[in-house]
Image (cartoon, rainbow, N blue to C red; front, top):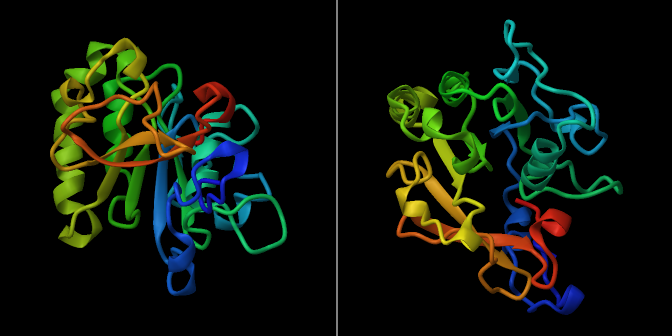
Length: 237
C-alpha cells in the first residue's frame, strides 16, 4: 500500500509514496544506497540481486570490519529497510522496493556495541561511490555518546561536503520513534543536522503516525504504518 494505496485495509486512496509513475523513466539504476542499520540479509532472494558487496562493511564488530555486513535473519530491521529502498522488483517474486534497480550496501553500525566511532566510520565509508545513506535509527536509545559527538558531527560534515566527488553525499534520517513521549526531533542530533533530509511517518490514512516525532527539522513525511496497528507489527521504515 505504501507504493500504491488503493484503500487497502481501510486506508485513504492516494496516501502513498507516489513513485509508480516515476518507474517508467527511473528505477534507481547505477545508484548505490547505503543502509546504516543492524545489517542486511544479503542472501535473501529479494535483496541478493541488488546487494553491493564491495561497498558493505560491519562497523559494529569488535574486530576488523567484515566486507559482507551481517547476513542471515538476525538483521531484521536493516533487511526490511533495504527491501523498502531497493528490493528487486518486476521479477514475479516477493516485494518491490521504491528504487528496484538500485544497489544496496550494508553499513552495519546499529548493533551492540554501538559507539559514536562506529557511526562516524559508517557515514564516510566509500562515500565517493555510495550516493545515498539511509539512517532509520533514532538517537534516544544510544545516549550522549551519539547525541553529543563532535566526531560524528565532523564525519557527517565531511561526507555532506566531499562525498560523490565534491557534490556531497545525501544522508536521510528518520525523525525518531519517540513521538508518544513528546520528544521533539528538532532537539536531537544528528536528526536535526541542517545538511540531512529528516523524514517523519504517516499512516495508510495519511495521518501522523503516533510514534513519529515532530519538529521544524522534518523535511518530508512518508508512508510507514497502518493507522489501526502498532509500529512493531506493520511499520516499514
